Length: 302
Image (cartoon, rainbow, N blue to C red; front, top):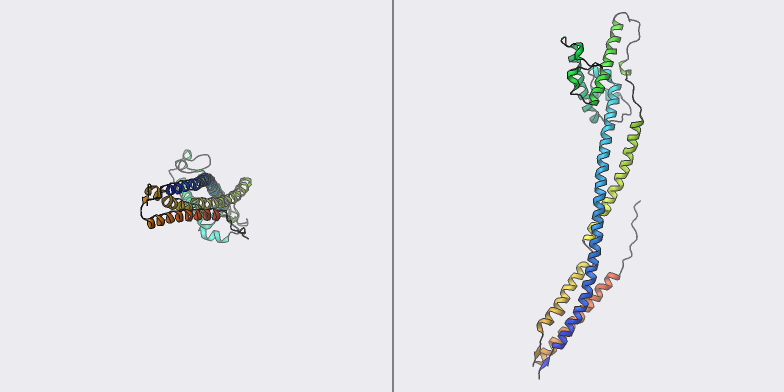
């Protein structure tokens, strides 16, 4: 007797194809959604990184200006000590509540010290003429190499030096009972502190903003990483592939299937049906796992 399994194999392949289409549609839809969310997160991260870079650069420039302003104030306050070539380490120890660190102040002090020696050397040169000096007393030959900071300090140093020489001369020529010139107290007038206070306030605001942007950066990075490894998608693809091979590819390969061997007929029939229902079981198990939500308490950081 001839036994035919062609109809069964065709039916199993058709039913499986329908189920696979449902699984494939779900997986494809989920992957498209996740891909869209991931692209949005990447776009947001790029925007955060751009804003973070802008604000970091802005803060660095402000800190540089504030540091320069602090150095300028310190040098103006101790301009006579600069003229006398006093070591910075000795002056720094005597100061209280300075806004600038020693290592940040040192380059400014050394630079101004070197420039002052060049200015003094040029001024005291016997070949130096009046027309070689500009209106504030700085040798014209040196002006072109000075930036705004150096030029301003040189101007204060020359004024302080002239006052120092004048006071010293007065004491030598009859100022025996005159009070001595207090070099430590000599200080050029300061500009308004409004810009400085505004800059410090803006730096604080930028730091707070940068901290918030760094937090957003971390959150978005974690989200992108999580979206790159979506939960359940890997299992869905494995079921999709295995079920397709077992219940579509193999049955279609066997079509048409006829045999005179009853035992082979029963074995193939039971095997095909078992694989079909086993695949359905795993499909429903997969969907059930996706619908099962773990109860997680929100994490609070104190």
